[in-house]
Amino acid sequence: MLDFNVPGGKLNRGMAVADALAAHTQTPGGAAGLAPTDKFSADALGWCIEWLQAFFLVADDIMDNSVTRRGQPCWYRMPHVRGVGRKREREREKRERERERERERERMGWCARMVLSFHPTRPQPSSLSYYLS
Image 1 (cartoon, rainbow, N blue to C red):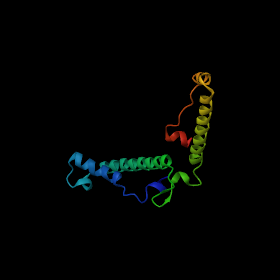
Image 2: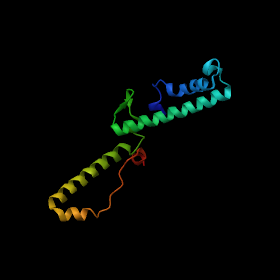
Image 3: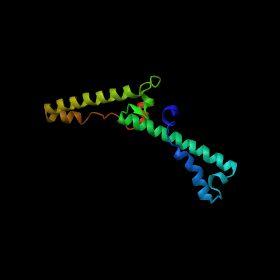
Image 4: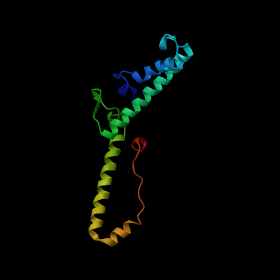
């Protein structure tokens, strides 16, 4: 995933952690003046933030049904990543069939609507993990 979402970015979020730590601790010389252990911890946290941003990019691409990201195919559309796009399409088709059934039942009158009120609702896809499972 990182090969598709981190390269080409400016990495400002990750690098800003050491600068923010230096500013917070009022370290002379900025990030370059941090103790080695503090610099290492800040860099590790910075990379965690970059990973989180990469995840947000993938989630955004899936939600927007994007084809490319930074001039190359989106990560979730790569052949080795299975199921994400197709599962979304199947869910969309299923929702459309359910809407059509609902319209048909509404044409049947009040009795069918009353019967529908007793039907259990199905879980709604509301998170990225739903599409990745």
